[in-house]
Image: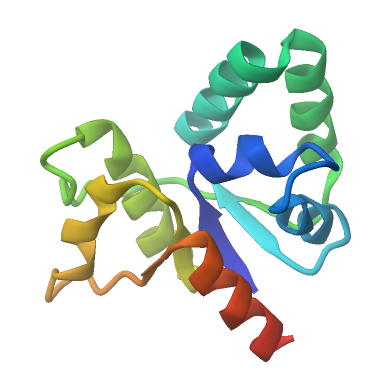
Amino acid sequence: MKVVIDTNILWVSISSRSSSHWIFQNILGGNLTLCVTNEILEEYAEIIDRKLGHAVSEAVLSTFDNLPNIEYVTRHFRWFAVKSDPDDDKFVDCCVASGAVCIVTEDNHFNVVKTLEFPKVLVMSLSEFEQFFNTEK
């Protein structure tokens, strides 16, 4: 299952003590294909570095470099879908370009994406995605 995971979900899923650690485990285990762009990876690195430290950031990104289920996406078009936080557009663009099932996020800026006629992008909260994932596997 191809997904785009917002930074706010990814960094908290790294810790084995986190209730969302199942996401990170399923990425590592190959059950989820994580779709990313260079911009998304840069944001992951920045936030993980800030929240969990440089060593954790390096370890996670090095691991991602070696996983076959990390799909590197080139954005050929920018949708400018998240006007209230244009920095979030990279996740929408990645989702559209990769054909991912959805964006997983807890960021309310993405609520506007749910109302778009085109491009149609499914946005799920962590709990919604957990239910979806468990029914689809």
